[in-house]
Image 1 (cartoon, rainbow, N blue to C red):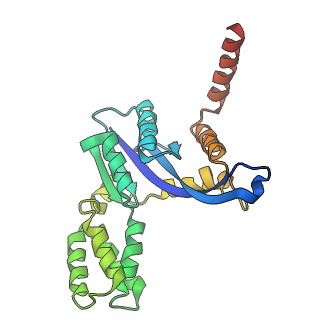
Image 2 (tube, rainbow, N blue to C red; image 1 turned 30 degrees about the vertical axis):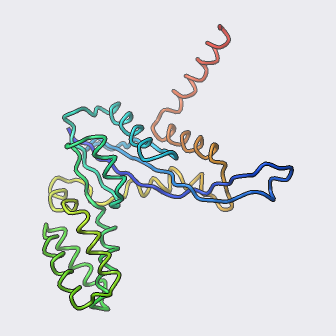
Image 3 (cartoon, one colour; image 1 turned 120 degrees about the horizontal axis):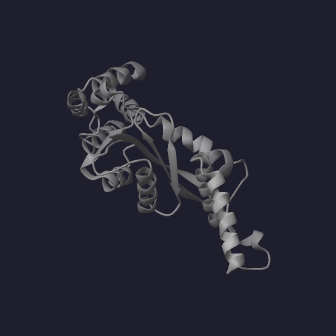
Length: 247
Protein backbone atom coordinates (compact mmCIF):
# COMPACT_ATOMS: atom_id res chain seq x y z
CA UNK A 1 0.00 0.00 0.00
CA UNK A 2 2.89 2.36 0.69
CA UNK A 3 6.49 2.60 -0.47
CA UNK A 4 9.35 4.93 0.40
CA UNK A 5 11.50 6.20 -2.47
CA UNK A 6 14.68 8.27 -2.29
CA UNK A 7 16.59 9.53 -5.35
CA UNK A 8 19.86 11.40 -5.54
CA UNK A 9 22.97 11.89 -7.66
CA UNK A 10 26.70 12.10 -7.10
CA UNK A 11 29.77 12.77 -9.20
CA UNK A 12 32.10 9.92 -10.16
CA UNK A 13 35.66 10.42 -11.52
CA UNK A 14 36.10 9.35 -15.16
CA UNK A 15 38.94 9.45 -17.65
CA UNK A 16 38.81 9.74 -21.45
CA UNK A 17 41.70 9.05 -23.85
CA UNK A 18 42.32 10.45 -27.31
CA UNK A 19 43.64 8.13 -29.98
CA UNK A 20 47.41 7.98 -30.27
CA UNK A 21 50.47 5.94 -29.39
CA UNK A 22 50.91 7.35 -25.90
CA UNK A 23 47.41 7.81 -24.47
CA UNK A 24 48.78 9.13 -21.19
CA UNK A 25 49.68 12.40 -22.93
CA UNK A 26 46.20 12.81 -24.38
CA UNK A 27 43.89 11.96 -21.54
CA UNK A 28 41.16 14.06 -19.94
CA UNK A 29 39.87 13.70 -16.42
CA UNK A 30 36.26 14.62 -15.82
CA UNK A 31 33.35 14.02 -13.48
CA UNK A 32 30.03 12.44 -14.46
CA UNK A 33 26.84 12.15 -12.46
CA UNK A 34 25.72 8.74 -11.31
CA UNK A 35 22.10 8.72 -10.16
CA UNK A 36 20.91 6.41 -7.41
CA UNK A 37 17.44 5.26 -6.39
CA UNK A 38 16.56 3.34 -3.22
CA UNK A 39 13.12 1.94 -2.39
CA UNK A 40 11.49 0.15 0.50
CA UNK A 41 8.08 -1.30 1.27
CA UNK A 42 7.10 0.88 4.20
CA UNK A 43 7.55 -0.83 7.53
CA UNK A 44 10.01 -3.43 6.27
CA UNK A 45 13.78 -3.55 6.83
CA UNK A 46 15.22 -4.28 3.40
CA UNK A 47 15.91 -1.71 0.70
CA UNK A 48 16.42 -2.25 -3.03
CA UNK A 49 18.71 -0.22 -5.27
CA UNK A 50 19.00 1.10 -8.82
CA UNK A 51 21.71 3.19 -10.49
CA UNK A 52 22.26 4.87 -13.85
CA UNK A 53 24.93 6.94 -15.59
CA UNK A 54 22.68 7.67 -18.56
CA UNK A 55 19.80 9.99 -17.66
CA UNK A 56 17.05 10.65 -15.10
CA UNK A 57 14.57 8.80 -17.32
CA UNK A 58 16.85 5.77 -17.50
CA UNK A 59 17.09 5.66 -13.72
CA UNK A 60 13.34 6.17 -13.42
CA UNK A 61 12.70 3.20 -15.72
CA UNK A 62 15.04 1.03 -13.68
CA UNK A 63 13.39 2.12 -10.43
CA UNK A 64 9.93 1.36 -11.84
CA UNK A 65 11.03 -2.13 -12.88
CA UNK A 66 12.48 -2.65 -9.41
CA UNK A 67 9.47 -1.52 -7.40
CA UNK A 68 7.07 -3.50 -9.59
CA UNK A 69 8.97 -6.60 -8.52
CA UNK A 70 8.47 -5.40 -4.94
CA UNK A 71 4.68 -5.27 -5.39
CA UNK A 72 4.08 -1.75 -6.69
CA UNK A 73 0.74 -1.27 -8.48
CA UNK A 74 -1.68 1.53 -9.41
CA UNK A 75 -3.01 1.75 -5.84
CA UNK A 76 0.41 2.01 -4.19
CA UNK A 77 1.20 5.37 -2.62
CA UNK A 78 4.83 6.48 -2.83
CA UNK A 79 6.47 8.72 -0.24
CA UNK A 80 9.47 10.38 -1.88
CA UNK A 81 12.26 12.24 -0.11
CA UNK A 82 14.99 14.22 -1.86
CA UNK A 83 16.99 17.41 -1.95
CA UNK A 84 14.50 19.33 -4.09
CA UNK A 85 16.17 18.80 -7.48
CA UNK A 86 13.58 19.07 -10.24
CA UNK A 87 14.55 15.78 -11.89
CA UNK A 88 13.78 13.90 -8.65
CA UNK A 89 10.19 15.11 -8.40
CA UNK A 90 9.71 14.62 -12.14
CA UNK A 91 10.76 10.99 -11.94
CA UNK A 92 8.66 10.36 -8.84
CA UNK A 93 5.58 11.71 -10.59
CA UNK A 94 6.44 9.79 -13.74
CA UNK A 95 6.68 6.56 -11.74
CA UNK A 96 3.63 6.90 -9.49
CA UNK A 97 1.62 9.79 -10.91
CA UNK A 98 -0.86 11.32 -8.46
CA UNK A 99 0.09 8.67 -5.89
CA UNK A 100 3.50 10.27 -5.47
CA UNK A 101 4.09 12.71 -2.62
CA UNK A 102 7.44 14.46 -2.45
CA UNK A 103 9.06 15.77 0.71
CA UNK A 104 12.09 18.06 0.63
CA UNK A 105 14.86 16.63 2.78
CA UNK A 106 14.65 18.58 6.06
CA UNK A 107 18.40 18.84 6.50
CA UNK A 108 18.81 20.21 2.99
CA UNK A 109 16.22 22.88 3.82
CA UNK A 110 18.22 23.75 6.93
CA UNK A 111 21.26 24.46 4.76
CA UNK A 112 19.26 27.18 3.01
CA UNK A 113 17.87 28.48 6.30
CA UNK A 114 21.40 28.75 7.72
CA UNK A 115 22.45 31.04 4.86
CA UNK A 116 19.24 33.07 5.16
CA UNK A 117 19.37 33.87 8.89
CA UNK A 118 22.82 35.41 8.45
CA UNK A 119 20.94 38.41 7.07
CA UNK A 120 19.76 39.44 10.55
CA UNK A 121 21.66 37.50 13.23
CA UNK A 122 24.99 36.00 14.15
CA UNK A 123 23.37 33.33 16.33
CA UNK A 124 22.70 31.14 13.31
CA UNK A 125 22.14 27.87 15.16
CA UNK A 126 19.38 29.25 17.38
CA UNK A 127 17.49 30.90 14.52
CA UNK A 128 17.78 27.90 12.22
CA UNK A 129 16.46 25.68 15.01
CA UNK A 130 13.48 28.02 15.51
CA UNK A 131 12.58 28.16 11.82
CA UNK A 132 13.13 24.43 11.47
CA UNK A 133 10.65 23.84 14.29
CA UNK A 134 8.07 25.96 12.47
CA UNK A 135 8.37 23.77 9.36
CA UNK A 136 8.24 20.58 11.42
CA UNK A 137 5.05 21.72 13.14
CA UNK A 138 3.28 22.51 9.88
CA UNK A 139 3.87 26.28 9.92
CA UNK A 140 6.06 26.58 6.84
CA UNK A 141 3.88 29.36 5.39
CA UNK A 142 4.40 31.37 8.58
CA UNK A 143 8.17 30.88 8.31
CA UNK A 144 8.10 32.00 4.67
CA UNK A 145 6.20 35.17 5.59
CA UNK A 146 8.82 35.99 8.19
CA UNK A 147 11.64 35.47 5.72
CA UNK A 148 9.94 37.87 3.31
CA UNK A 149 9.56 40.48 6.03
CA UNK A 150 13.24 40.12 6.85
CA UNK A 151 14.07 40.60 3.19
CA UNK A 152 12.50 44.07 3.24
CA UNK A 153 15.45 45.20 5.36
CA UNK A 154 18.05 43.11 3.52
CA UNK A 155 17.16 43.33 -0.14
CA UNK A 156 20.69 42.55 -1.32
CA UNK A 157 21.29 39.49 0.86
CA UNK A 158 21.87 36.58 -1.53
CA UNK A 159 21.41 33.80 1.05
CA UNK A 160 18.03 35.10 2.14
CA UNK A 161 16.84 35.60 -1.44
CA UNK A 162 17.98 32.11 -2.43
CA UNK A 163 16.18 30.56 0.54
CA UNK A 164 12.89 32.32 -0.24
CA UNK A 165 13.09 31.29 -3.89
CA UNK A 166 13.90 27.70 -2.91
CA UNK A 167 10.84 27.47 -0.65
CA UNK A 168 8.45 29.23 -3.05
CA UNK A 169 9.43 26.89 -5.89
CA UNK A 170 8.60 23.87 -3.73
CA UNK A 171 5.39 24.79 -1.95
CA UNK A 172 3.54 21.67 -0.85
CA UNK A 173 6.76 19.71 -0.37
CA UNK A 174 7.31 20.52 3.31
CA UNK A 175 4.73 18.26 4.97
CA UNK A 176 7.01 17.16 7.79
CA UNK A 177 4.28 17.10 10.43
CA UNK A 178 2.10 14.70 8.47
CA UNK A 179 5.07 12.51 7.61
CA UNK A 180 6.21 12.28 11.23
CA UNK A 181 2.68 11.39 12.36
CA UNK A 182 2.71 8.46 9.93
CA UNK A 183 6.23 7.41 10.89
CA UNK A 184 7.61 8.27 7.46
CA UNK A 185 11.18 9.57 6.95
CA UNK A 186 11.69 13.33 6.64
CA UNK A 187 15.33 13.05 5.55
CA UNK A 188 17.02 11.24 2.66
CA UNK A 189 19.49 9.49 4.96
CA UNK A 190 19.20 6.12 3.26
CA UNK A 191 20.21 7.26 -0.21
CA UNK A 192 22.95 9.43 1.33
CA UNK A 193 24.44 6.42 3.12
CA UNK A 194 24.09 4.40 -0.10
CA UNK A 195 26.48 6.84 -1.76
CA UNK A 196 29.16 5.70 0.66
CA UNK A 197 28.43 1.99 0.89
CA UNK A 198 27.30 1.28 -2.67
CA UNK A 199 29.32 3.68 -4.83
CA UNK A 200 32.10 5.56 -3.08
CA UNK A 201 33.58 2.49 -1.40
CA UNK A 202 34.53 1.09 -4.81
CA UNK A 203 34.31 3.82 -7.43
CA UNK A 204 35.83 6.75 -5.54
CA UNK A 205 39.01 5.33 -4.10
CA UNK A 206 41.94 7.76 -3.85
CA UNK A 207 43.62 8.29 -7.21
CA UNK A 208 41.10 6.16 -9.10
CA UNK A 209 39.74 7.34 -12.46
CA UNK A 210 37.41 5.10 -14.50
CA UNK A 211 36.57 4.60 -18.13
CA UNK A 212 32.85 5.35 -18.37
CA UNK A 213 32.02 1.86 -19.62
CA UNK A 214 33.86 0.18 -16.75
CA UNK A 215 32.39 2.51 -14.13
CA UNK A 216 28.90 1.77 -15.39
CA UNK A 217 29.49 -1.98 -15.28
CA UNK A 218 30.96 -1.81 -11.79
CA UNK A 219 28.00 0.24 -10.53
CA UNK A 220 25.62 -2.34 -12.01
CA UNK A 221 27.51 -5.23 -10.41
CA UNK A 222 27.48 -3.60 -6.99
CA UNK A 223 23.76 -2.86 -7.37
CA UNK A 224 23.04 -6.48 -8.28
CA UNK A 225 24.92 -7.68 -5.22
CA UNK A 226 23.23 -5.16 -2.92
CA UNK A 227 19.85 -6.36 -4.18
CA UNK A 228 20.70 -9.94 -3.22
CA UNK A 229 20.83 -11.18 -6.81
CA UNK A 230 24.52 -12.13 -7.02
CA UNK A 231 23.95 -15.89 -7.25
CA UNK A 232 21.14 -15.40 -9.77
CA UNK A 233 23.50 -13.37 -11.96
CA UNK A 234 25.99 -16.23 -12.17
CA UNK A 235 23.28 -18.84 -12.68
CA UNK A 236 22.02 -16.89 -15.67
CA UNK A 237 25.58 -16.52 -16.96
CA UNK A 238 26.19 -20.27 -16.70
CA UNK A 239 22.90 -21.03 -18.44
CA UNK A 240 23.76 -18.62 -21.26
CA UNK A 241 27.09 -20.38 -21.81
CA UNK A 242 25.34 -23.76 -21.93
CA UNK A 243 22.84 -22.46 -24.47
CA UNK A 244 25.68 -21.12 -26.63
CA UNK A 245 27.46 -24.49 -26.54
CA UNK A 246 24.27 -26.30 -27.57
CA UNK A 247 23.70 -23.84 -30.41
